[in-house]
Image (cartoon, rainbow, N blue to C red):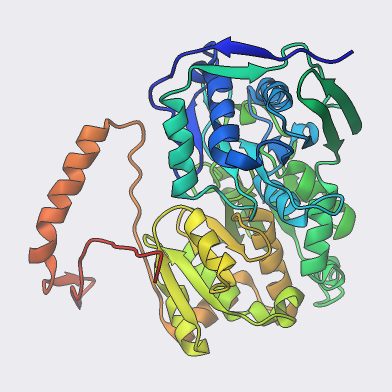
Length: 483
């Protein structure tokens, strides 16, 4: 029996404007009647446009509170709008890098038209936490400004959405589900293993046997101790399979690997503050390497024995040692990029290698444009994001494996590798201040004041620890993506 489509009258909600990584709001906002439905309809209309009929989409989230409810809404609205097929991770679960990989990989001989990712990244989860919905395009990356603007425009004018309210799909069971939709046609929902394709991608990029030899002690004569914190986010099942099953890391080397809707009451942001337990463990000197990941698995923090690697240094070290990674041995390295707030360590590596380097606004979508144009192979940002052209998202697990591959090749400690980098290129630093839950007007006043001080700042001489420094440049950032 064909499923009926209903056209549900609705009115716009204010503020459904996607940011650099989709729409993020408090859970109670998404729980308002019609709120999620409105935005999903806007994604299908504004994100897919004329490709909506017959489209194939990947859907998944980081397992936070409200994910399963949102997956059900996406299934029902997609069916009613003529989407031909959804590929959904089991239990509605996929890390953000895994979604990007599935989009790029394609399925059954055809391209994937995009993906819908349910995450608020490193923001807290739970009934009073944050939720988010993000649209990724056919290239596997976050939607560019033109598409997010089109989605937002539809949210301001929407008068109805189409839905199959009686369509039920068991997303816990792997397999194919087929439906007939009245007046629309055939609709397929494929529930897939959330981990398998991503693990296969990592195995094609890195030399797992070499990394396994490092961990077992075969390379150095001493077992290499790893400690990884998934912070109850999306990476848990991925690192369990990769590190324990494939690389021989003992289970005691993995922390908080079970995804939880509220991230265990924690803040899934991999930095020195929120991954404090991991930092303390590494400072005790019993582990050689540590890593932490955020809620949806795209951010990472790298640690050595009592040693913190800044995101800008991590990017520069990987850039310097790309030839250690099999994936890059067989490909031409085209260039590097970093976000504006990221210290310029990678710029020096690019100069030494005769490669282009780009400084972009905050937002991974700007890196995607450069990757699609073949201008960069590696990129990163100071907010603990690192990635390469293997997908169009930052990728925390990839960054961890890149470091393990470099460590296996160089047979040096994390600290010694970074200090070797400083010795050759000098040390770049940056300072970041986070102002959380502040009023926008106050933030704008602060920025206006800082801008007013810039002209007088240039040329000033500053003294610290009996060393004199002269300010060379202070300016506003500008970016022309057409250059």
